[in-house]
Image (tube, rainbow, N blue to C red; front, side, top):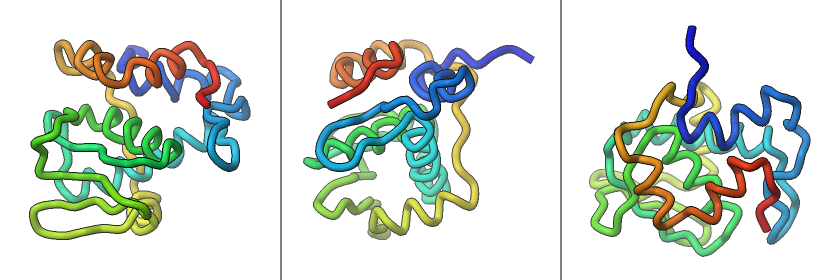
Amino acid sequence: MAVPQSLAYRALDRHVIHGQADEIAFAGHGRPMTYAQLLHDSACIAGAMREIGVAEGTTVRLDISARREHVIALMACVRLAAELDEGADFVLSGEPVILRTPVTEVPWDVLVRAGRIDPAPAPETDPEGYEQRLATAHGDILIALIAGDTLT
């Protein structure tokens, strides 16, 4: 079985698997979050989003002012290979954060709890050009996580 090389795997899973689970991934704005916590939370959010209909190529807009939730939501979208764009049918926004879809609204805490049932794994590979598209808008976050650094 080939080792996954997707952006999600390289930014989170790889660090947890190779002993950095308890290293701080995010240290800004409130309590610190380890790589294991970021992996868990983003996989749970991704699992819930997947059940609501977000899949590879689905367009999602992130309009989240809280940096911690923004990072988690970004990595959840990366786990699903969702595209990020302003003209999306799926929008994560507000404070507290709510996922707005064409048919419903789901609060952040419900997404986290619902996603624990079946968290989303990292894909083995990314769609063609996916990493480059995301790096344009979120390169600062992605580069730091891939390097195993701490975000602030």
